[in-house]
Structures are given as C-alpha cells and as structure tokens.
Length: 230
Image (cartoon, helix red, strand yellow):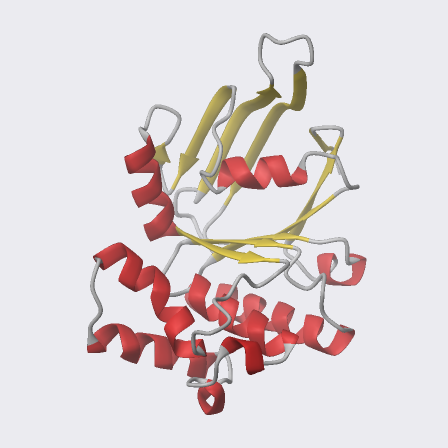
C-alpha cells in the first residue's frame, strides 16, 4: 500500500437532518474513516443504514453537521460552495447504479461532458482523451453510437470512462452493478479494479453483492449510521 497521504480522511462525521425541528434525525453518528491512495474499498450495509448519506458527504454533495472531512489533503468543511464544486470536479469521479448518460448524445460526447463543463469550451484534445478512455474500456467501435443504443453493460462502461475524464484521485461507485446481469456486473467491477491497480485511483464501491465485496482490498460495513468493527 502506498505511503502517500490519505485520499480521504473523515473524523467524527455526524449528519443530522431537520436540525432543531421536532423531526430532527441524526443519520450518521461519528464516522471515522481513512482511504489510502490506490485502495479499493467496498461499502456494505442494509438499506437505510446511512451508506448513501455517507457517500453524498464524501462526494461533497452534502455537508456534515459536525466533524471534519479532508479530500486529497484539502480540509473541506470550511470551503464555500464554489470551492467545493471545483474540488469535486477535479478530484472525484462518480459512477451510479443508473448510468445517467445523456441518451441522445454519443458515447464520446458523454465522456467529454466533464471536461467541457470544467473548461467552458470544447477542443480536439478533449475528444482525443475521451476516445482514449473509451478505448480503455473496450468501446472504440461504439464511440459514436448514441448512448440509448448501447446495452446496459456498455452504458456503465461509458459511465466509468466519463468518471475518469478529469483524472480523479477518487472514484465513488454507488451500486454500479446493481442493474446489471452477472456477466456485465463482473465486467464493470473488473474494469474499476483494473483502473485502481493500473492508475492508482482510489475507489469506494458501494454494493450489496457479497462476492464482489470479498474481492476488494477492504470492506467497511455501515450499520445504523456507524461503521461496524470487523
């Protein structure tokens, strides 16, 4: 394992919804967690355990009520929304259970979207990078096909390529194999694992699939808003 500083460091993360209201609910109860560079870690736990809330906080889509969160050595809890957006866009890639591709756009156009959104313009270098990423996930033949014409497994591979567009240090994969058949699920998992191994990208892989979880470097189990000791 790399001796570099952690990609993620969570200390005492608490998340409370409806703060100060009669229906106030604390969902996360003091989460401590460190993810190292290149580490492939699964996140398991029953529905309603707090996994999605935790992932939203790690992905800088929501703020913790208390505690500290550092992403790529950058303490985030005091950053404004603009700074969080920039940090997220340059350091975190997302792969969701549903691919969230733009169906009428081609595969290569979907992969280019993070780069175009960040720069505010399009250039040939972006297309070349997107083409190279699609080649790396075995989709060169389909790079100009509209996303709606691709199979579920192919669409998820496009989503993985898109997640890599900005060369992130961390990929958050939220049940990316949940809607796929076994063969396609294994292929997407193997793709994420190879990215982690070959590029040193850290991965948090949320899953209900015990067989895939067992293949990860480490597993954390979230139960009732806390990480269960293993």
